Image (cartoon, rainbow over all chains, first blue to last red):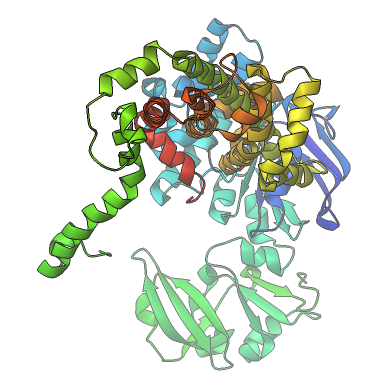
Amino acid sequence: MSGVTLNHVIKKFGETQVIHGVDLDIKDGELCVFVGPSGCGKSTLLRMIAGLEQTSAGTITIGDRDVTTADPADRGVAMVFQSYALYPHMTVAENMGFGLKMNGVPRDVVREKVLEAAKILKLEDYLDRRPKALSGGQRQRVAIGRAIVRGPEVFLFDEPLSNLDAALRVQTRIEIARLHERLGTTMIYVTHDQVEAMTLADKIVVLRGGNIEQIGAPIDLYENPRNMFVAEFIGSPSMNFFNASDLSEAGQTLLKPGSDVFGVRPEHFNVVDQADAILSARPDFVENLGEYALIYCKTDAGSEFIVKSTELQKFAKGELVHLGADADKTYCFDGTTQLRV
Amino acid sequence: MFPTPIQQRSRASQFSYQVFLPIALILWLLPLIAVMIFSIKPDGDFVKGNFWGLPSSFEFFNNYGRVFFASDMPQYLLNSVFITVPTVIGAVALSSMTGFALGVYKFRGNLLIFFMFIAGNFVPFQILMVPVRDLTVNLNLYDTKLGLILFHIAFQTGFCTLFMRNFIRALPYSLIEAARVEGVAEWKIFVYVVLPLMKPAIAALSVLIFTFIWNDYFWAIVLTQGPDAQPVTAGITAFNSQYRAAYHMMSAGSIVAAIPPVFMFFLMQKHFIAGLTLGAVK
């Protein structure tokens, strides 16, 4: 087992640079999630660690070995692909044992390791089936099993849940978390879904446009976003942003000097008296999810935002409602640099 | 549904369908029917000018008996097998490898090499007649099966490579990447991952190439001369004497020569059609 270190890693496709000097230190046994919108370079970065993309500059270290130019096979990594990438002409057992068999591991050792992995993933009953005869969730487990069998130093997951339906996604997510607990191996996990990132990660790396925006524990990113991008990306629904003109006089006193954008998460609003309100708005549309409701509001200055509340009765469509929030749950940003103040 | 099934159309259109379809069919098959009738006529009918009338006597057993037992036809048929089968194996084996290399690896000149393979198909093969004949003579391969086989393999590999490369391109690339991460050597990826997935392409291509090569006439007469090496398509003319054509025997021989590819087609129809449309929809 070993950690992964990226040192000023750069990736160029021809003339276009897509990863701009990433520095990252993933500790041994950590589950690190790369998250970001599509095209942010998170998959490319993962594939560079796997050795499927060449690193244009910088170094990648796994444990204490420099693997920057090593073949994928020599890096001690196992990868789970978004498309599962199961060999369609092999049974589940053959799929899981293929890598070992090709590398000259004796037949009975392969058999043993495959059985062990199958037991962990509850795949014992399916060992003789072809991937075609499995459901999406089962296929995903086989793909994970194939990775486990090799006993790698680092697991790499490339959006492993995005082909599953919602219920199965939650279930498989928990299985991956359990697996990580059980194996204690370093894992790097790529996703565009911030819920997956929040629930799984020891450490989240938020990427945008080939740069790291922020690194931290999930709750750190939620509570202390470094800039507007992270504030908006982490948390669901996203943080609301307001201009000074949207705010009441009380609200404007909360706006720190040097900042002109004010952020409040939908779940941190509460309905208050006009005197204490940081802003006032009119509800426009309601999504009632039972446990809570999402209320789409509009300030008179024209900003649209979302309130997450359990007190639906306090919001009447079109009627002015006064909203407040705890001062420590509000965020101030510099609109031009996008940085938090 | 479009077009409307004929059963649901008006009576008039049903009627015209029932009349014109058989007519079109007979017209289309007329040459074949003529050859079939020729093949059961006695020699005398052709001397007397009875080309299109009914046979004056039924000579089926006589003519076909001569094809099988009193001519070089069995030898020619065997030649055809010995030429066609190695060609199919050689061309498919080579093109699986070239297709893999061109379909999987990114290297400078990949596209150029691929275009050269394709470009070969656009050369009208007749202009190669003299140089290829000279080449085989210089290599001492003129009038041998080997010469014909080598030329066919060389010439078919272009088309086969196009076919195989496009098929391999359509396979999910992540399968190859998954195997690479697992530390599987490249040649093992080819043998154990890609080749098994190419089975449909290999089957389709084999059937196509089999019919191409079996039915080849041009190169058979350019590169070979006698019963030692000539395939059946060229061997049929051996029934002719210097000044006279033996139409009845040539017809019988043609029918016999056509049986293997026709049989192959019906046996492997699924693959044949798959071969023609492979990669067209995906």
